[in-house]
Image (cartoon, rainbow over all chains, first blue to last red):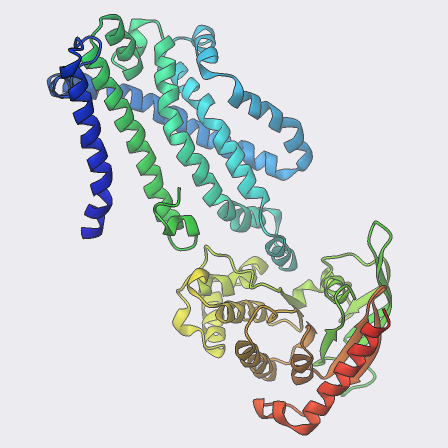
Length: 263
Length: 261
């Protein structure tokens, strides 16, 4: 516990220093609140409008988690296909890279135009941005099984199915978690981006992304700040949930799970 | 250690076996060899003499280019049911406990119940003195202990043929000596036939009934040296004059082989 306090002391000091600088800038330069609200103003808005924030959080969280779960299922399945043969991998991998390099802000309006503007379309945007790290990392894990272990299973006349279930999949678990950790943060970005383009009020309404455009257009900068804070809280929550799951699954055997500050 | 009923064909026969890589390099050539049940055969020689490749040919993990290999009347791949391979590293599954790792072979063979596997492996863990760490994960074990788990796993399927590819090369000498004695002790329990690749002359002399000294480019059996010491052998053998004499003989043979290049 004492160690934990010591660990937290420096980040906390940085946090306080940034708050002090922020407040100082507001006071010294007399910045109007619609450009930069002071920390107490933002805090007051968070308290005052917490009901809106919680509602927006809920909507966006459902979209982000939906897209995230979809990307896990599809990503792992695609990785399983990729792991079957180098030919399949070589012919399809460039297109998964394409998926990653096309900017999501360019694709999101198309998706919302093509499909009905709705929560499921927003999920789709989150899915697209999440799926690549999961495919890439899981494939890597599935194909990087040490040769001796493959030989060991061959010597036992193991079937393809048991080789997959008892060797390749467990071996890929740490790599899968690397992908899951990256995508946890991306899912929030995807959901917010999707909402930004979900022009219909009935859709993104209440969602964090929609609320951000709304607050921006109304020059409610303090509310905008509150929304941004809520968004990053969500990202952190996702990230730490996945990290916790990772620790639970890998604590016995994998190096990265033993060192909390590995990356 | 030879088969008592001499009318039987030998347990293992290698008939004029050759192995060429796809780039034309001949790694093994003209290997003729017979092994009887219970033989403990060490393969020793300079690197590149194909001793590990010979093990892989016996296991069927690498196909033969020329000649025949017969193990108990079967081709290598079919004979996998009666053999186990022990690799240079322990090759344990890090997500399984010691118990889970030892059960792997029986589990993959698929003709045992979970309860039977558990019982068989508990007995084996007692035999190799690992009962206390049955619930541990590989990363909690020392290198020597990992190798003992690997040996226990290999023996769990009661193999008639054990292929060991330099299993103790990475261990310190004390651990290696201890594990050598352990292997001989286990061999007293279950008379498996062994092919053992090593770089250590002393290890080969201590363990083997026969030592094959191999030469490289292409890999051939240059000389065979019989080791007639009776079993069970104990650590006291290591300081016996006849042991040291035999070590000297193998070392000299090895020097001759290396000098040829």
